[in-house]
Length: 240
Ligand SMILES: C[S@@+](CC[C@H](N)C(=O)[O-])C[C@H]1O[C@@H](n2cnc3c(N)ncnc32)[C@H](O)[C@@H]1O
Image (cartoon, rainbow, N blue to C red; front, side, top):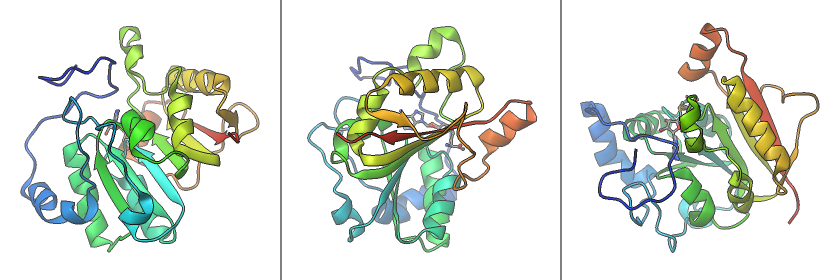
């Protein structure tokens, strides 16, 4: 569904969730957003990114360190775990779910995390223009919305052309990590990324080993409970 009053042409991989925020979530947006959220100048839609806007990691984190970008960070479980256990690395969560970002901020504050920033925006636009070329060491996409009905497949984020977008943001040798519990989306991811000239497989055999930095989330738990196989994939950015 396009956001009201916008003129986005391409389908997006999300539907904005409404719903009331709790008092704590409202407070997080009021009090913690100035610390954690990078405000993005918008283009047409509320979650769009103005093509002239830039996120300069050294300025945002006040240092030069490896950068890991998580796309669709949900409630923030993976990135909070990662940013608290790897203080020498900088982390960026990109999400359109307002309530999930609030929860992520609350957890970051509790854990006294300083190496995490959040962006509320459509992730492909962040990769395509907002991040400097070659600035990310890793990009993580865990349990992206599967859009399982055939007529919705055009909304899937990992579709032909995604290699160019992700490959732009990643440095040479950087790693794209993915996980899903939807077999046919896993197959599509592998087919798409095998064919993209920017990437090569970083695994032998059919699938990658479970990425050790990936914590169990409700989405993975639900997939397991339904008897689905969890598929991990990892691809390396080939030198430009
Ligand atoms: C199925 S959830 C998985 C969340 C989390 N990675 C996990 O494993 O718990 C997918 C998330 O991706 C977000 N998302 C989908 N498309 C997006 C986009 N184009 N840009 C940013 N976030 C997106 C959704 O809002 C949602 O929170």
